[in-house]
Image (cartoon, rainbow, N blue to C red):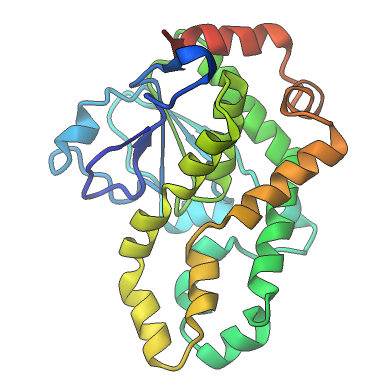
Length: 267
């Protein structure tokens, strides 16, 4: 797993190089993850230009995409997978937390009322379970796996707003199918924390300086093992294994999974 130095794309990482069982690894340069691409500038980011992206999958909601539309290199194919559409339509979620950080952290008293005392962690646990069980999430991650199995899709980048939750679960599913162990899955999931905290440092500092609880800020901005565990527990409870979740929950046939492995695994 390689962090790609980029000045206009947050949390840009290549899943290539991740170690897999049996001395194998993920083939580099084919599957990448990041935050939103609304500031992408290839002239300022030659490392991004060198990736040769062919396909981008955007996991954000309609509102997020309208507020911060992606800037894409010429010729890149854009696919939309609104992971949270069902949860938002149900009325239980108004906007993803990553898209509301400025508002959520602008008033420490309001943040404490709505997010303090473990409420933020409970919120994310509920969201992560929906990444497994909602129809819109299942359709989005099915598209991700199907595209990655296609030899013609070229280097593919998938992203959400901050590149940590919806994107983090997508990376977990991919790496799990390819044969990564639990330690590798957790390490990749948590790897975005440094970049996210750096990107939102001024917001965190302003919030805490105004008397805000730093634990609330970190619960919103970072990722924690308990968040991932909520999704993994949902997989275990509903399907028993990641393979069955992919086959029965996402509706991805075994031959597509094998094509994915053939394409992305080396060594």
